[in-house]
Amino acid sequence: MIKLIILDGKKLKEELLDTYKEKIIKENIQASLAVILVGDNEASKIYIKNKEKTCKKIGIDFKLYHLEENTEEKEVQELIRKLNQDESINGIILQSPVPQKINFDACSSLIDPLKDVDGFTKENIYKLYLNEETLMPCTVLGIITLLKTYQINLDGLNALIIGRGNIVGHPLSLALLNENATVTVAHSHTKNLKDLCLKSDLIIAATGKVNLITEDMVKKDSIVVDVGVSRIDGHIKGDVDFQNVQKKCAYITPNPGGVGPMTVAMIMHNVLKAYEMQKGEKKNG
Amino acid sequence: MIKLIILDGKKLKEELLDTYKEKIIKENIQASLAVILVGDNEASKIYIKNKEKTCKKIGIDFKLYHLEENTEEKEVQELIRKLNQDESINGIILQSPVPQKINFDACSSLIDPLKDVDGFTKENIYKLYLNEETLMPCTVLGIITLLKTYQINLDGLNALIIGRGNIVGHPLSLALLNENATVTVAHSHTKNLKDLCLKSDLIIAATGKVNLITEDMVKKDSIVVDVGVSRIDGHIKGDVDFQNVQKKCAYITPNPGGVGPMTVAMIMHNVLKAYEMQKGEKKNG
Image (spheres, rainbow over the protein chains, first blue to last red):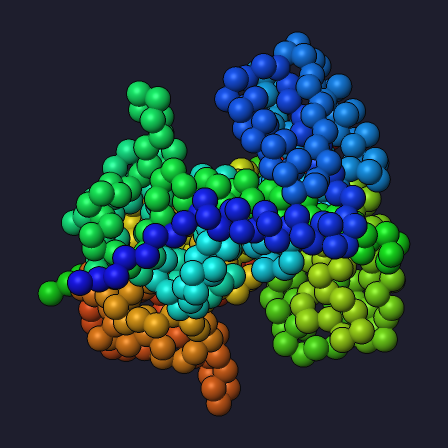
């Protein structure tokens, strides 16, 4: 009988938030996060509400810049430049998606890398590629933090990432390589996914295909991380057939309740890290 | 009996150079490559001589900027800035290694991405990561060009890269992913290299460990690319035990005579591409 360990992101999130809150009080940290929302996407509003709630809970100042649907790209860019200059702002997030007439990449690339708490600017991805200290994409950092907290040694582990998107799969492949894992990236053109899964110590599924990973694809004692988010009849479904896969593996993330909460916690982590980095810059500058 | 095909980089290099020469004459292209050498490293001088010879052969203007061993970093940076501005220069290479008191990365990062024919600047690596059109690192481009010329379909292929250095292994992993291969990166922390090799359709060894890849590690009909360069008693040795591995695989690079010549050809390719890109910029600008 294998002892199954649930990688409880929800619980770890709360523990981390408590630590951050304590640190903020103890060190009298005045950190702030600015979120830019253009238009009225309902899902975006829920995500932003969640960030706001989490900020308030631990004592990070939250500022929402809500621009109208018909805002010009130039105005978004001007706002970002202003926030870059504003010393009272430590982290900047341009909420995705933006209205069609605005080029998301052209705007988000203007965010000061030291305030880029999403970790997606050219400078921060390049640092991740070079294995240099950086603000890492939150979901990627969340996955690595979750695995490390459960004492999983990534060094030399055979890790399979399924999906190569720029939010999770692709930057995760850089991050896991930095942790000295042997990293395989599979995707829609991969021919022998089941074989690859059966050879892997760690499977991270980030495709959005419901129940892609089934019991027969997972070797005994493996570690399974489910990053997939699909909405089916109002319920969130992941990439992993949790009910059956859990019978075989040693560690598994629930979904929801695994990677998702970690992402939110890591935004807070990055705001605090950005705060420290900016303080260091000021001292050196 | 398997029909073995030798991936003849030396021959392909000559064919490509003929094509470039023809194009340069036909389109009356006035392209130029500037190489900066600091100090008197003997190996560097041989590499540079080779670049010069190849440039002359096809009609690219070659300019060597030979600075003294005790040159200040500031002077190297000033030269790069000057060459960036100089419209008669299309490609710039800062020859590695540089004397200890000069920070190579701090200098090379100043090279205009449009003139970065080595393909290692932040901008060009980030474009490679995003699968956007870019000047690719020459050895990486050489490997992909060699494989494609021999009609090897990379789409869905199980590719194993051994080595994660920033010159070959790491950028190659991005490039092969862009070609829709299923990519695994192995390295010194990898635990089961033989197993991984035996599961791979394509093995690319870039470690510098002589004869790391032996016959028993390679599956029948596989493709083996040897990027290793070790000097043993004045001879160049690769990572692959060519004599024995060739008995089992379908395609193999000789070494020397495989990837090495392709790298030189791709420098010329990149100078011509840089020339075209700069012409386009001027037209649009």
